[in-house]
Length: 102
Image (cartoon, rainbow, N blue to C red):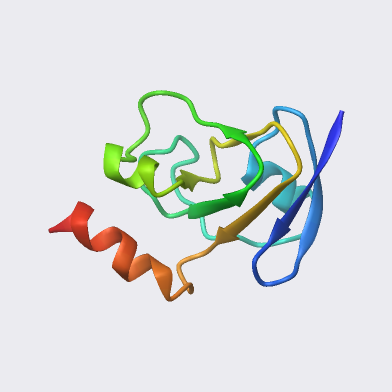
């Protein structure tokens, strides 16, 4: 089964059920910031705005980050059509990260 992922800046790309957001974006030719590909470095941080992704246990996301629907694209597995905000260029990230980094 395939899903459509749409970013808040208007890009969209297909994602197979269970494929990571990062893998799907790269397969569509999009370049996203990434580092460890294990959910530990937070370089591929994003926010789920709508839809469904599964996140494995053991990522660097804190409980407060998860409550804000934050995700790490390298291990977030797409389970439905979704709308996401990806990349550190977002004006939201400094505000969302402040409680976690202080």
